[in-house]
Length: 447
Image 1 (cartoon, rainbow, N blue to C red):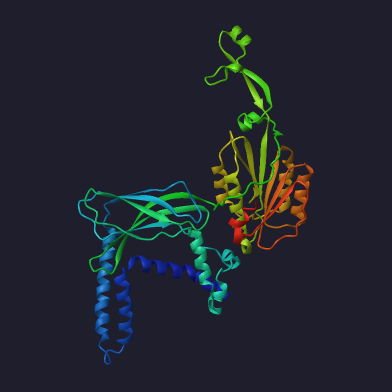
Image 2 (cartoon, rainbow, N blue to C red):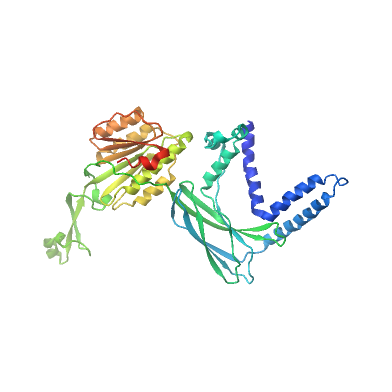
C-alpha cells in the first residue's frame, strides 16, 4: 500500500523537477539556493541580518517571475522546421536538421532550443514487473521505493535524450540550420512533440518558454548484427497463384492467357497466329508457380523478467531479415502478438524494410499460447522451402513443432536466445544454434 502511494507521487516529483530545470537559469538555481539558506538563517531577525538578503532575493525573484509571465504572452517571431529521417536504428546516433527563421523586426539574443519527445508515464503493473538493472548497487531504501527504477522506465518510454542547444543571435530575416543528434535507446516509434524556445528575462533568473508544436514520428528499427550463413534452405516449392503473389518468380512457366503486346514484352512470347487474325500484336502470358519460400518464426511468448532476452530475439530476427537475399524468393515473418500474424516480403510483394518496421513494433504476446503459433506454422508447412525459428525456450511444445516441420522434410534452423545452454538432441536436417544475449554479436558468427 505504501509503495503504491509513493508510486503515485513519482509523476508529481518529475513534473516539478522538470519545471524548475526548464524555467530557472543556472544563475537562478544558484540564487534560489542562496535564498533558502539566507531565509533559514534569518528566521530570527534579531539574531542575524541575513533576512535582509532573503528579502532582497525574494523581491528580485517576484519581479523576474512577473516579467517571465508577461513575456510568455508576447508572440514569438520565429518559425521552426524539423527535417528528420524516416528510420533510425536503436543504439546508433541519428542526425537531423532544425531550421529557424526570424520573421520579426528585432534581433533575438540569448535564445536556446530544446527539441521535445513525447513521454509516457509507466503504469503500476509495468513498474512492479520490471527489474532494476542496478539493483545490487542500491541501498535498501532505494530498492523499496524504486524511484530509480521508475526513472529508467521513463527514459525507456521516451526513447532518447536530446540536449538543449544555445542559439546564436538571430537578425531580422536571418535563417539558420542546426544539426541535432540523438541516440535511440530502444526500438519502436520515436514521437517528437514540439520545439521549446527559451528566452531569458532581463534579470537572468527565469526563462520564458515558448512551445512550438511540431508532431512527428520516426521509426526506430531493431539493432542488427552481421550473421553467418545458415545451412541449405531447400529447393523451390509449388505456390498456388505464384505469379500473382511473387511477380513471376520461379522456374516452371505455365501458359495462362493471351493479351495485347506491351512495351517491354519479350518478342519470342508473341503469338503470331492470333496477331495475324486480329491485326495487332498479341503476347502470351505465363504463370510461374515454383519458387523459394522461407519462413522466419519469432517466439514472442516472454515475460517482463526476460525483457533482455526478448529484445535480443527481435534483434536476431531483424539481422536475419537484413542479410536474407529476397530477389528470387519470398520470406514469411510469423509471430503472435494479440493475434497470429504473417507478413510476407520478397520480389513482387514488398521489401525487407517493411519487415524491419514490423519488428520495430512487435511486443510480447499478451494472450494465447505457443500452440497457436505452432498450428499456424504447421498449416503453411507444405508451402515452405525451409524454416528458421528464433526461440526463447526449448520445451516439449517447441520440440513438437520442430518434429512436425522435419516430418515435411524441410530444412529447419533453431536459434535459441537465452544465457543458459539447452539440452540439445541433434537430428538430421536440423541446425541448432545457442545465442547468448550478452554475447549476441559473437554468437551470430557461428561459422
